[in-house]
Length: 242
Image 1: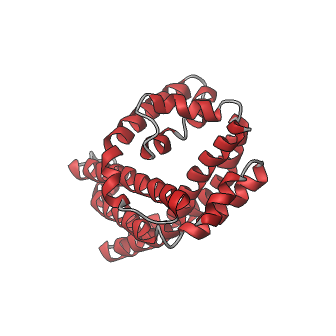
Image 2: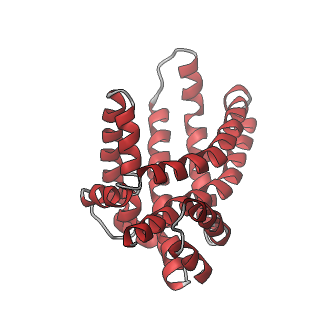
Image 3: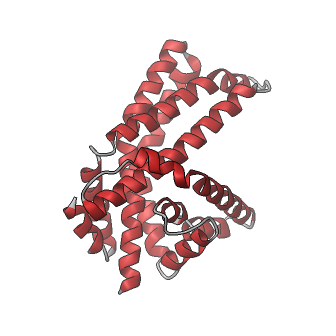
């Protein structure tokens, strides 16, 4: 993983940062495979829990508690595995070795949860104000949860630390997020929409098959997303140092 470290340190330009993200992805794919499968299973199980209620909502009926249970499970599971991913990427970058990230992730689970709640509120309020402020704030504070996961900031100071890195590099950050979002997000969204027919229009067997496909998708999407945010953090740090 020393190659990973060097690539991140030199990721100063826009093009070099993109290259470093994909280089990091190739190096993190295997170390994050178990977490990716776990993350995908959480998402797949959540979808199965919510399935009947989603069908009810489409029919204009009120959902039961299963919908909210699935949403909570997906949200909490997502936060846990994002923290695991960031910590493992950092440990491999710093020492070349994995640690017990599945245990250490719990130490900052609730601070990350609190940050994301506040982040969501700030972004939502910004969206109400003609959308543009919401986009600006979403990008400005995008690295706050990574800072908390790495033990560099608390809930409130994470906003300040993210803003410190992104301020002056806002368009740089937005461009990186946009390009990776197009490369990954659009194909994923197309496949996910295609799976909806299996989830909600077929039987339970088809829904389980769709959940299995989601797990496979996460083995690619998850390590690439971790690579994106961790490499972006290190790139912005190097640009600040300059």
